[in-house]
Image (cartoon, rainbow, N blue to C red; front, side, top):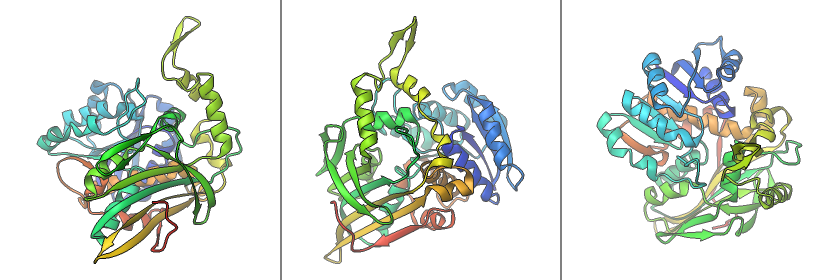
Length: 399
């Protein structure tokens, strides 16, 4: 049915390729491209031999010219950007130049500023619309499935959604004193930044880790969680009509926080270049190089993740509380695709988003966040593709 160019060869791309191959009726052919072709070849070797034809290529995703040349040679129906968020705009420019549909899992973040927001990508709206192509932003889990959950709740259970709390819990244990479950550079930039939430039409800023809650997660138990800024708050504040407050919480263990504070205190989380032995290096990028590769955590990670949304609002004049969530087992993910659950919960929704566009269940022209489309076919695929969701109409509330 379609051809997909997957840019990136890390843990998320690994999962997305595996899931594309499980759905060869939709993904007839895929190409995996990244700066290091050997990584692409390793992913191809694991998953080739089924109904999906796989090829690989080397590309510098910072170079629009290289990307345009690759897209023109492969002629994909969609480009799945599973590279770094610093490269979003270059890949979008290449998609515009070639009139190719675009998908990513995380919004653009400037390399020299620890600030991620949608404004740079939203500015492409008129260009993508004029080109007659779609840019689907944030088709991971959070952002991604959390937006689909919000659209589903709004469509089926509420006349008005008043408050939303997004809860992201990882109870996995990889056995290392300190490691991150996805790209260390992105993870640490995200966690060490100031927090914020949306309330009554404006942003409320908090100090990093200032607001803490304890929540009893289904199948995981009680965990400490902290309020962070997260990109989907920005789009949901616009697209979930009438909402008064949105907050995002993520769980962290004390060991992680202690290590992070020590690294911050000695300057290792800084993104400002320093001179070392005559060369300019970024401390956080050096730290990333010495930490375990998240893609290597799969065989040693045990436990589960629980990511979901708790809503409060009105329907028929009555108050409604609604919790929708997914629980994902690290070891089950590894058995299926050789990945831990963090990569799995991002790679599967990336594939489903591409599937929605290739099958024309989602169609249009312009730049869209995932909650702007009909959630029902995506929710149906979550159950089929390994991320089944559960509902609770009487949840413990943190709203």
